[in-house]
Amino acid sequence: MGGRPDRLPPLNALRVFHTVVRHRSFRGAAKELLVSPQAVSQQIKLLEEALGVALFDRKGRRIEPNEQAILLSHFVQAGFDEFEEGVRRITKIGHRTRINVNASPYFATRYLIDRLGRFRTILPEADLRLTSMVDLPDFVADEVDVAIQWGYGTWKAFDQVLLLQDIKVICCAPQLAADLRRPEDLLDQTLMHPMLSADLWPDVLRHLGVAPRDPKGALVLQDAAAMRSAARAGLGVGLISVSDARDDLETGKLVAPFGMEVMQGMPPEQIPGFYLVVPRAHRRVRPIAAFCDWITAEDWLDPAPIA
Image (cartoon, rainbow, N blue to C red; front, side):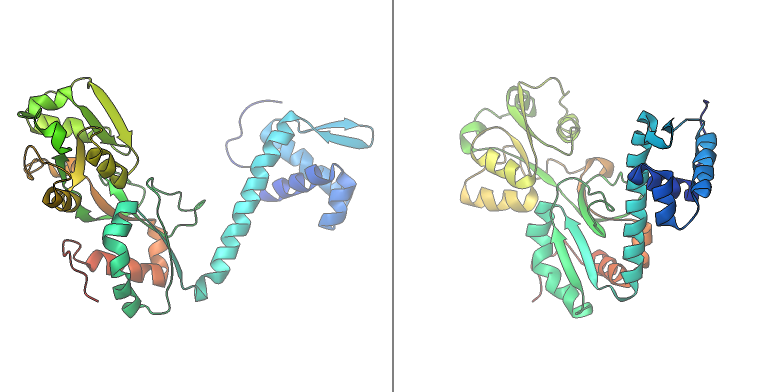
């Protein structure tokens, strides 16, 4: 036996295989499936021929799954678990009101939470569940319907809409600012990078006319809050979102040695932002579609939510 199958084997044969592995017996599987042991044996033979691989060691009347069978059984189990979850979801879809939203932590705290009351006036029965993860979630495994993700709009497998550009300002603690007279001086400082983008600092430096090179030191931080705190603590030079930068410049906790407009004129594809990201099929669910319509219609540049 050998070779690779051109297509998946019959689903019924996989179901029988799954049952035989659990019982370690054709007879036990036949009893559960309400068929004869001969029918079970025939399905296993069909599966082995389709795969080109022997799956069981036969020892008299006993059978034992071999290494290939044990490996396959894990994937078959996972597949049937997915089928069960899919059936569970669609049987509840007609009366579902839950919307599982995952938002970038910064967007959630700075923009979204204060405005969710607006959406509730549109769909009062909505059962909103909000989580915050930095990385784009696995929509199936994490049971997420809609994501608001920081990045550059590169998730081509999903529908995506830019909600708000995340314009950055070069900021540092006052004690570091004296050493930053020209953009070239940045190369002698510890530059703090967002975990989700290794290109942001190089793009900003090139925009300022500075050729990027291996930095003196680098600090990679998971999210905007950590970047802001590290900049205030004098750990290095950070790229801080405009709204946060304004607040800290007013209090003197941070300094913007090259002004607020360092990203002005950069190509749009090099400017990160917050994107609505949603699997296309999810838009067919009425509450999710309503949430997507609301969030894309909001003016996220408006800093003052209406109560």
